[in-house]
Length: 423
RNA sequence: AGAGGAAUGGCAGAGUGGUCGAAUGCGGCGGUCUUGAAAACCGUUGUACCGCGAGGUACCGGGGGUUCGAAUCCCUCUUCCUCUGCCA
Image 1 (cartoon, protein in one colour):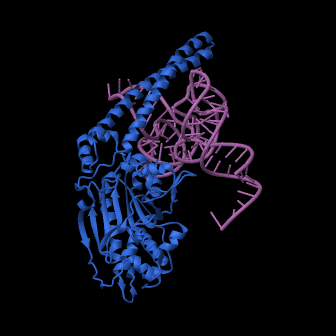
Image 2: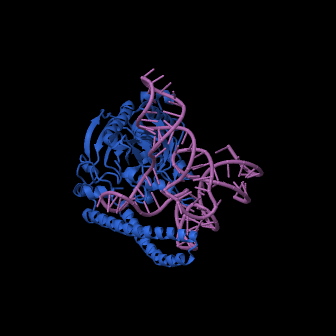
């Protein structure tokens, strides 16, 4: 969430940023934030003062008792009764102001970076670059949902039987392709200096709040209510929360972590004709990279992460493009996001396979993720993450783009991981 | 899952109702000494909020309670340890 002091100091800039996101009533809401914070401050000042008085009386009572001055002590006790009720009142006022302030701050998205284009929806995203050539396929080309049946490598019907729609069963070479991709992505990340972690895939409420899935996207996560745990929608959640309530030392930056996890998304209300096959699933695998950086370095690192993801796509020989998301299409917590899309040649569609974002201090403020610099001051770090990569759409594109009458050719780079070169 | 024990500052570990934000040791940082280092000695060493400042307030696993006053007493939750049971 945003920092109140930032809102106070850069009111106009933040207002303009929120407007770029098409965030309604931004001005009123920002003013309300400041007002609530003023309330909070004044009630706390009062409370602290009266508490100080009470503390000093209590100390006096202690001394009087020691000296055996019973009567004077009793007299002092009488005075504290009044103070006590006042404290209770101010306490309530204070915590109420704090609560409403926090609740309001939770509803405000991150301020977009200056380079974020104005826009309402996906059409307004800026195409930064395109790479690779789109393959020309024969007229009898098949979309991946046909190919997986033809070669019997992914079975949606079996998934429906044991779980439900959107939970495919990968079989034979399909399963091996999954495993190959995961290992390839992990190895590439490790070679790029990332440290591998294997986090839990269920997280508690605090973690959900830490990275911003709660309270904003409550309905998008599977909720194990018996234990009040959430299935992760992305490894970003557990991996970034590793650093919740942590004060790093500056030398430890940047922290570079990578992890593979399954991801679970309810995708409530987002199904339609265009999400056939692997295009949208409730469960899928993803390798996620997360970095925690010094605020001065985060945009440099964002570029580095973008290059890393592009490197993977190049090695997989997939045509891709990079988008700079516009204000209206960006995630709630992000300041700047690049999406990578691959071209899936039978569907003739671009598919989002990665999203690389800089959250600046938006997450770290919630997480209380700080670092101590050479000047011994603690300050909030910047957090970033990106998919490197999400599997299903990569699989879709590999299958579609490389289909031939003799079978589907696997990208060279995967051969050692697969143990075969063709499906 | 049942029985018992425990949770204190970066770590170890005192503290069982008042002057305790908390002894002591280790570690860290600064200094003295030294050609340099070690040792020794001296000093310093948590986080957040409020306040222009002086300073104040909160925090001893989380939440609640008793009390004029809680690290200390009570309730509750969580986590860890030991034993028993179960189990990949």
